[in-house]
Image (tube, rainbow, N blue to C red; front, side, top):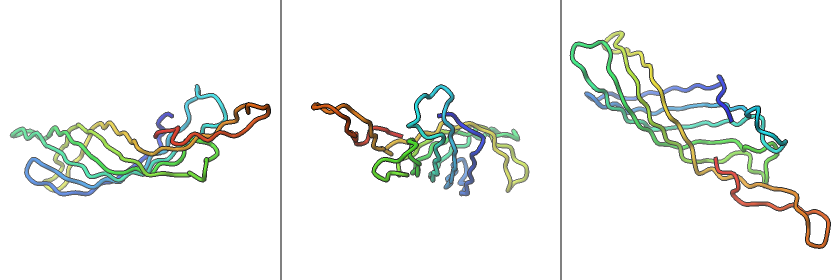
Length: 151
């Protein structure tokens, strides 16, 4: 899957000296890569995530910008990666985690602008897979593999 421009989020939190804590909500819409073949993979996948983040601001005296690093943990609600859900598994919960780094700029004492990057990952949402297989005596049957897709 590849990232699309349909994504967003918001956060609110509290600052204590050089440490910040916030609660963040994210929405992501991922599209299928052009090189993915077959008609079993969904054209897109959505993920709605909630995380608690902790940041450390690297204070540099008399500088208008402040570098920061952060980590976050939480949960993600992820839609099935399959075009047709198996066993009515349309969405599942999984764990989510991220690391962040960037800089902030003091617009006013109460308002800051942030620019940064993040690495986000989710894991633990497992989806079943079904496929047509040959029967020993001839013919076809549907085989369901539990937890075949791990998102």
